[in-house]
Image (cartoon, rainbow, N blue to C red):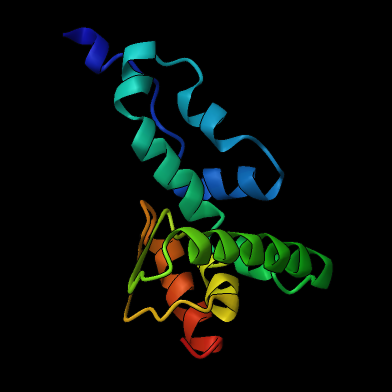
Length: 139
């Protein structure tokens, strides 16, 4: 039973934020020195922390026109596939919606008549950014 608790004290969010800003690997910082069992049991929590720290960075990346153009191209391809294989679709669910930087360009180009659009993510911070990004883009 001790392997459930076989871990080092977790760095504070402030320490993790500073490490993130320096480009350090947050997943490594959270798992280093802990038992494999502990890391396996806490993997989703570690991912959530890492995503929370980078919340907003994906929306910020969309302000770079080269990045945004690449994302639009990818989403146009995705929309064409869905229109071809699911032409009668009336709902869309984006699992792992993050900051909605894939959802918005997809909605911009899809010709599907979608009555219901939903998304979810493990990181509430990123969903909050998604909500603002969708609103900024009139969704």
